[in-house]
Image 1 (spheres, helix red, strand yellow):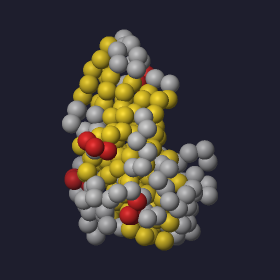
Image 2: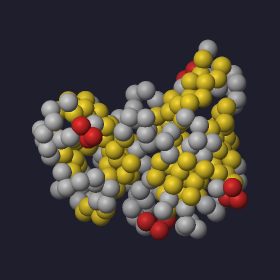
Image 3: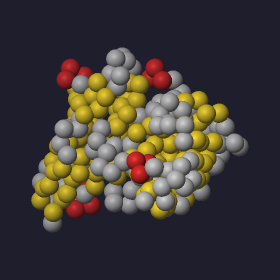
Image 4: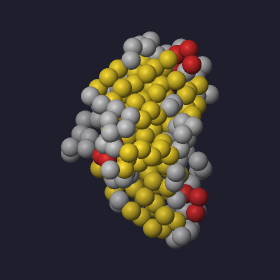
Length: 115
Length: 117
């Protein structure tokens, strides 16, 4: 596709429910990042993939958060037993480069609201 | 640890005014990259510029200009003759080269710019 696509655009979950957020990066992009953006804050790093390998998951806030990219393209961020503090916009970004200091392309995000 | 500070939270200007958005960063790396991103109401982050730590030349792109000063660890962004379409949240971000292929970004909290007609 022309850009990074994320779905759903909005998600409302009841506390305790599991959710899955999808990211379709630009075709051929090697690097993929997930960020969490709380209301009024800057995005914060969650995890990084290079192809199918998850090379850094140091930003995942708890073991309820899990991300995968099994075929090196589409990625899914899963949150188990959602809590109110998980409410945020989840942004996905991808880049063709392994060294992404050129800057990456972000999707429009999934806004998760936990009620 | 790396850190980005955007002390201004909200700025409101009248169209055609010039406006400068401040960014101060902290890092122990000698090689690093600085970025500015724009986030319009639609939510996606739009890449504006990247500078590396060895290039202190100021840059101008149309109405946008950037002033990078290593001596003060600042990377400020100026919009000349602002327009209503410039209204957005602007983020400054830092990436350290020591991260290798994992060039995760550390963002500031963002500055909300409102340009009134």
